[in-house]
Length: 172
Ligand code: HEC
Image (cartoon, rainbow, N blue to C red; front, side, top):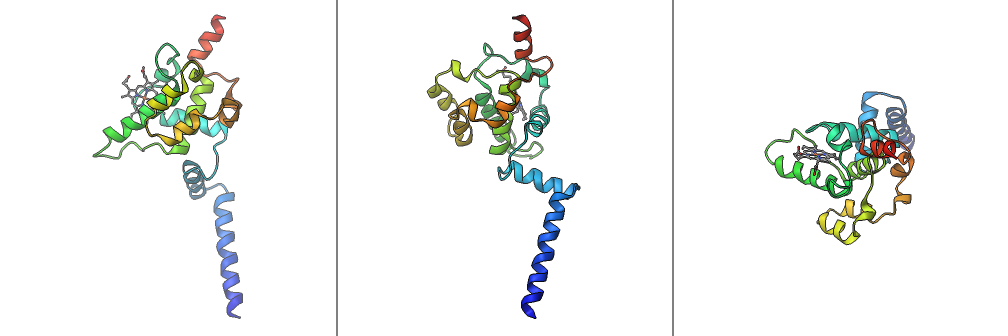
């Protein structure tokens, strides 16, 4: 008898969890967003794009990113590391701007690489790694061949309005 109660309870708990995740609702969305930011679930290319636009425009406009180019400075993987550092260093007292998680930044870098441009191959990998200091997640990304980056591959043929890549393609 006791065992049956236990099983019943377990069944209810599992059903409740499944319902929370499967039926669209604010709690379920929050749980899924959290799981993705922790890297337990992967971002779809569309989700990654939305994330990139929302998280990278809290301090400056998207143009700063869209017009960034191979002559402007190091590739996005390095820029993303600087932005992460900037938040960590400037945010010591207040926590108004959320720090980037590894999974978020890995997804976001792939989006800007695909939509704006990826000039990692113009750089020596050694130099990129040095600029990434001890950002292991981004170093891992930098060492992953582009064809093994699902979000970057999926968005490869897309452009963003006003982006460096779009202007460059237009000029050809
Ligand atoms: C906490 C605020 C903040 C966030 C969030 C932020 N940035 Fe920045 N970003 C800055 C500041 C500050 C600068 C440098 C000053 C400036 O140029 O306005 C900058 C400059 C840049 C530049 C220009 C760099 C250059 O050398 O010209 C790029 C590109 C950029 N950010 C991309 C990003 C991307 C991509 C993200 C999302 C991963 C992001 N930023 C998120 C604060 C932020």
